[in-house]
Length: 169
Image (cartoon, rainbow, N blue to C red; front, side):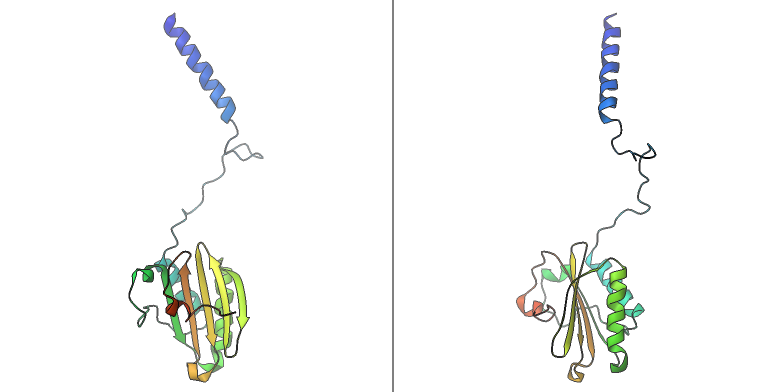
């Protein structure tokens, strides 16, 4: 009889807990749990950002670019930066740059700022803890360059390097 009381007490406690938690995580309209996400959210790493940026640049009409970061100073900060630089023919560069920015926006990059300077068009975009600094240099002396530099939030990039990609406005 003593064991029966404990069993009954446990059943009452469990029923009380079920009552308190009923509905948690349930879709109120259908009464069922929400469907799991079809794909788990992967960490948005420098490699993924680099691959996405390069693919969207190509899809936007830009020629293959350099993602190596060659010529940049050494340091741990390079792990949180994903550079892309390319040279586009003058006749196609402006349209390809804007098409690339449109592609980025279609892939959840949000425009944070836009600015046009003398010979440079700037777009700053953000996504999942990263800022993407997009630049289009219109001066022929710059070689009709397009630069897409993604930097993870909190990354301590040397000032000299940061000055090369940030929008001065």
